[in-house]
Length: 386
Image (cartoon, rainbow, N blue to C red; front, top):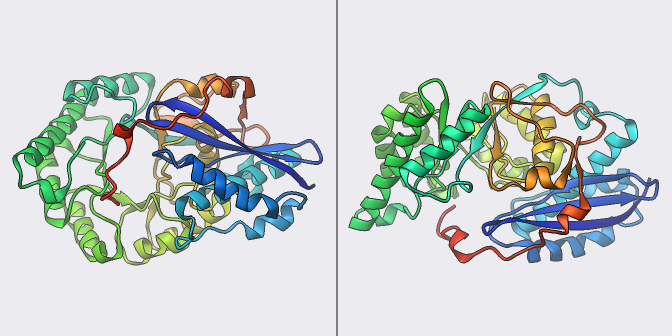
């Protein structure tokens, strides 16, 4: 079976987000889907990376192509290039599973579970950024059947500014949002916070003290993950552990080479590889195996569209050190652009797809209704963070 085309499919979801899918077509009429979604309007760079990769794909057999689809943290194309490679790998695995008439996970072994615990990421759906607005979003998702929610409550916070009046005000508002959501979801549901690398060691530890009453399930991306901060990150992990809070991160790392230092250095309790730029199924499984040996849990990063969600469900079914999967709750495009029904949360879990391939088909007519748009400037993250 040879690859005949690789087609990018871009879908605008909101003023903040576009989804970037790939459809791989073959000379036997089979097709497969992958996802390469990034934030902040990098689609033009991704398209250029796809143009560079396409000559190495067309006319080639899948078995020839899969070995060359490798991601590297030092890639000159960065996450843009790695996301395209990862999406192609996903799509080719989808094709192989459809050809075999089995779900993707069956290509790699027996699933360890048939349902996957998920948490609802409330950040992009919450336009009212008041504590009451976050509470309203949280209640809605718990009512839908989610048993865990995540918020990114610290808009505009950055540790060098925390000694200013404005910095203190922003931090206090973030803490109020967290406490309001804890009250909204009750003690029986889990609360996760995403800090987007906004703190240094001392301010991260101070925040963990201030939020003890919130009973956090985890704190994500608390401090910068650049190597110079790794020792501080390890100390924050130890401080968090004393308070019963898991430390999660490494979401932007490409492949095992990107995540290795976080696992081997004991920097995190939970690593968050993302199938859409960490290398696809094969590299995600490699990350999981190595993390399991070090006693580190896996929670895939997944603020993504339906293709990545379905792909992540297959991956999560296979690994022994799975913890919980992210589900993005932004907009209503999920059901618009897929054929069939997206999984619904039952007791906080999505069912593992059972049909051939990835288990999802995209509606081309619906995708064409929502063309790519450059995200609004306000949605772009502070470039100092990371």
